[in-house]
Image 1: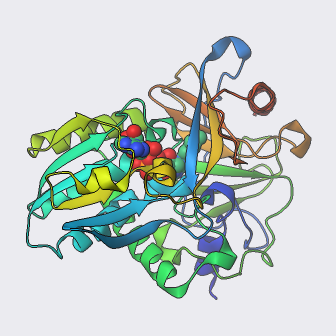
Image 2: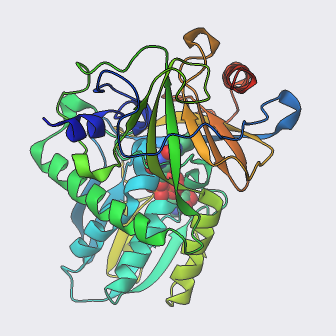
Length: 379
Ligand SMILES: Cc1cc2nc3c(=O)[nH]c(=O)nc-3n(C[C@H](O)[C@H](O)[C@H](O)COP(=O)(O)OP(=O)(O)OC[C@H]3O[C@@H](n4cnc5c(N)ncnc54)[C@H](O)[C@@H]3O)c2cc1C
């Protein structure tokens, strides 16, 4: 494995953005330009403007992408993206649309108006389909709106012992399609952009870690730069800099809604209670993009929520980087900061099986205090 590959493999940890390992001995090496002129985040309790909660739709064996016959209806499933739906959706949407092409008709219903439903509608429209989206909730009230949302194509997605070669192949194809689609939206008013991310480390990233089989092909993320003491403004000795794609959910989802409508699609507010109700629709092709809702709708008990919450601080347009980790492990463990137009998003929670949509006050306190500590000590 060459040095470039080692650097690319660094950073496949939690969120797909932290540093799992693999770094050269020594200081700044890599493709990104280290900067010391980063604007500090003004982290304080009086700048907190809201806390949001969402349920990542997790399935231990990964997303579901398959066709099913329901009498005369072709039902295509596209759900269960865990903490990776904002990253992967263009890819699984294209693959779902390809499954829909098995029928001669070019009239389809899409169930769900989160990121999976909206991108599936667009991929169907690109292939000539007349699309109606049916959904119980639409933006800004979907889980997708509660997302961070970085390029984290493997986060909370699948458990290694449940992966199959066929699922892995689907994942890799979906990730490759999505990575390109998202890049093509940068600079076009979709709220998609490149952002420098700094993973903060108390110890030097170890080049013995992180060489296990990774789901994500090396070329589907930018290379990393290892920064040593004095080479970055953070209070940890080490930081790993990696540019990454970032999506601003409220801008992005509204643009997708507009695109679906501009291409002739319509959106109907409706909640479905059973597969029989789906089969009774006029459209001969139905694509199920209901996220966690699929648990009851199509009886998939494997789906569980990974509860996550974000606390937003007042926006600071001058903050043009993200961070992963705290100033010291005791200050808060797994935490992250990402700036966007609607606020500075602070997060760091993933609780399996927690169906509550109420903010966890203890987690909120841990995450805000960790960032007050971090940015209070930034040089
Ligand atoms: C805190 C947090 C941080 C996250 N960070 C990231 C990140 O950094 N990167 C990333 O890629 N992903 C991230 N995610 C995960 C991402 O948000 C999800 O994977 C994604 O939003 C799932 O999209 P979806 O369209 O499948 O589901 P949803 O957005 O939940 O949409 C489901 C749609 O189906 C509809 N529906 C459900 N049931 C029914 C029914 N019975 N009848 C009619 N309609 C129904 C709903 O109303 C909704 O319109 C994060 C999530 C959270 C909560």
